[in-house]
Image 1 (cartoon, helix red, strand yellow):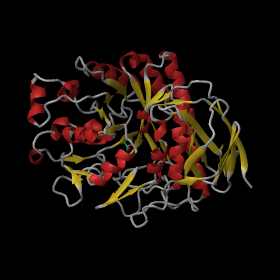
Image 2 (cartoon, helix red, strand yellow; image 1 turned 180 degrees about the vertical axis):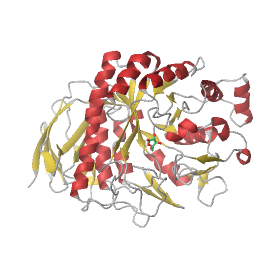
Image 3 (tube, protein in one colour; image 1 turned 90 degrees about the horizontal axis):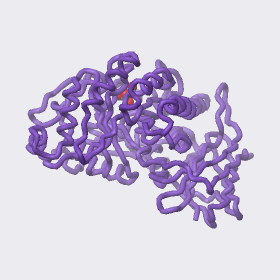
Image 4 (tube, protein in one colour; image 1 turned 120 degrees about the vertical axis):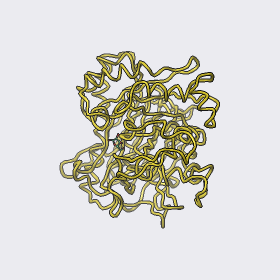
Length: 494
Ligand code: AHR
């Protein structure tokens, strides 16, 4: 028997903008995140556009990736940009000490990253090195990327093939300064952030938003100190929160799980709501006008690596459970869209909760990819405030609302509603009150599968993909939607 939930859309109220940057991605030099996943080189037998995988570029274009954070992660705080410019054959080969101790050919550097952004039509978000580089090195990298012409660095950029300056709208002042970025205390990190940010200078025709390295999970003290000491000098504060089914030391499998771990994963992902509320409250104290963005630039599931793969490469499969994680977080971001203006799911290809997985010439779109695809109308839409009353889904010690939801009015004025049913055993009937929307039809798509472990493998790449949804009935101002167990539904109202 179906449970019953009630959702009210306050179509007469105007919520914040759901910035397209919330659908941002993260691409680190880690495992096959870049090499093999995005970049195969011009001579590769894998079809490519000037070295970039053609299949990957096409798939990412389809979901309209708005911004990509690069080169790390932990990799960023030991990345020296000069290693990645100039003739490919002459580039330094270094060791990726964070991720597997493998050699880093530096064949994907600043020019290749900016070329990737141009192919995707995405904006760059470059993370600078505070950990083991100087403010001068950071300032010179920014000048190399953005200086119009005339300076020695601009001439060097031109000699390396790109006379025009690139736009650099977002720049990270280090990454995880509390950990792999230098194991700093918050006061010291705040001082360094002030110092490094001072030398990140935009040319006259550009604005570079400076994103400070923010808290790990619920380190509210970090947020307090950063905002108090550096809040006026930054434009964004990052937050990192990963979802594990278990503990850091024993995270759990991406594919072999029972209902206990289904429930723990979804309950843990729901903590994002509390984190955004509490970090947001601290930010409000120092920045009531909400000038400083909360940038959730690492989020998503983190499981044990797939058996037989390199432990340092963080390669994991992606199931229907990940689709629920993605939808729940995208709905939570709608609630906090007045402060959360950009996020980067970790990571885009072949690493953690990826959009795409590759194996040699093969590529699959994951269930997470399809959620990002269904949510495209949310990009730059206006959030419609909602009230949701849902029964609980509980299993063992975990309890969460069975239904999660968000609603937006897209840039063309059409209203869209997203609903996710976390209960793997029971359908949910959601009575959606849409007074004021003026709709007469509701059409949409669903992501679900009979099995909670359903995934897209290289042999069966289309097991989980959106299907037309016929479970919505509209009568007057009430839309009745029957959500199958473990499903994500996105509806467009007209
Ligand atoms: O995404 C993997 C790693 O997780 C990143 O490099 C780091 O910032 C975080 O700890």
